[in-house]
Image (tube, rainbow, N blue to C red; front, side, top):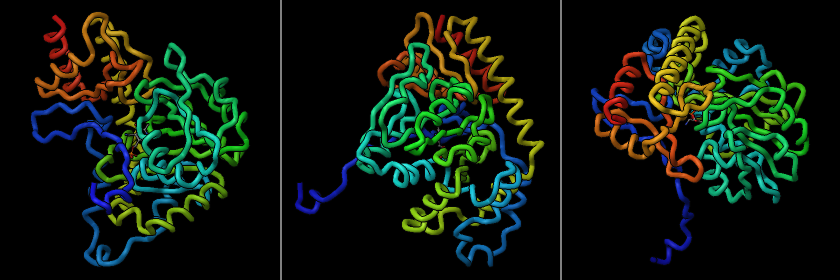
Length: 351
Ligand code: PMP
């Protein structure tokens, strides 16, 4: 190792799902929307002038913050936006988890949480999900330096009822509790209305799934002014201009087209339930999902095998080679046609 290399920060990065190129591929591996965003998004971007691009964007993305605040009936001072919810979550780890006590999160959850904790040198403890893969609020009643979990959880898809989410928040007034609601539009109960009751609650959301804008990279969060101001201070200590002009405009337009949004969510949740029934008939044990994906294991066939054989047929799903879940596959809900193709491929593989 060369001398200069000794000072390099070494981290084990998060590994996102593959983004294969090719038009024949059925991509059910990263929980994107199978549908295009609202045409209003395209129009908003197309109406940009060179002048809009010459200047820096508004560092506070006020136009977007205002739109989100008004849609969700929350004060603008309680809204924060970022480059996808990953940006907000990463920044939140840096901002709120500044204690010697460990941050708590489930053993099976979004696998970026331990990556951020490692990156920032934050102590953490993984709290096991129950045997049914549920979050047990009782296990979050111990000393900690913060709490973060996804609800509905990923990659399980299971939602924790609101009363139990509140039980966790109420039991932890001395730490910041982050509820990652990336998939909340597809099911589950939000705790958004609890941000006024609990000053230590941050609710994080994204445009990537239900609003079909993963490529645009826009996330948003709700919390007390205390939390939002702290986030802003850290953001302005790192990168003032997070959201670009197109992202601010596009996301704003996506919020405006509410009917389109509701139709997309409806279609995806219907397809999810149909696919779930079909998979069950094929010998899969499918966990109850409140998201735009299904988490399932087959009664006889190995999960990794299924994943690899589907890939040979140009169908990409997600497989996690991790304890407790290495016999499960995660399937993003696509269009009805894509799901039919998946089922046909699975029938072929399983026989
Ligand atoms: N939270 C969870 C639970 C997720 O699954 C994802 C998607 N990978 C994210 C946050 C991040 O999504 P984005 O950065 O696209 O908003």
